[in-house]
Amino acid sequence: MITQLDALPSVRCPCGWARRAFAQQPGAVASVHVVDIEADARAHYHKRMTEIYVVLEGQGQIEADGQLYPVKPLTAVYIPPGCRHRAVGRLREVLRWFKPHWEHFDRLLVIKGPAWVQERGEARHYGLMRDLALRKVASYPLPGTSSESVVLQICPKERLLAGKTCKLRTIE
Image 1 (cartoon, rainbow, N blue to C red):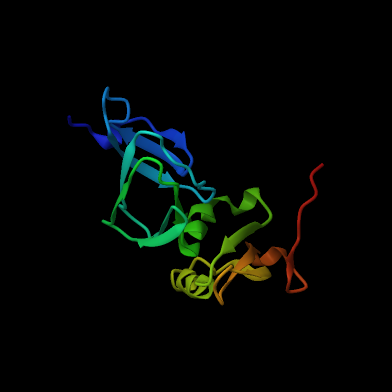
Image 2: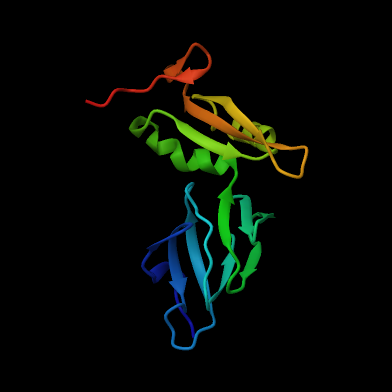
């Protein structure tokens, strides 16, 4: 079987929007997905189908059965049936996704792991933090480690109040 991936329709999936090759073929045991990962990617699994991901651009992580694995362009990921998985973007990727949409919402709350400081530096390096304010608003320990996860608040700098919180617009 041969398919042209860019000719397939995009469908909503737990990780964002996918173009799925071979998923509907009778007797198929695997599919190939071209996925535009979104910030709200949710862990999910498939009962009978193996998925194969190939990362084309960006960097991030794949969470598979609770473990995180780094991915970058041309990383291939084999996901067997029953494996709970989701894609996780680096802060740089999340900010790139939201960059054209800041006028539509007041702030973004992001949960990140221990590498958030390095990710913030990477986002600054790429100019994605230029007009944004980022503040750590909460943290909590990661069980079984000495590390912590954090809740980050990100908003345009002009909406930052008293150096800590973002001004929220009232909805009328």
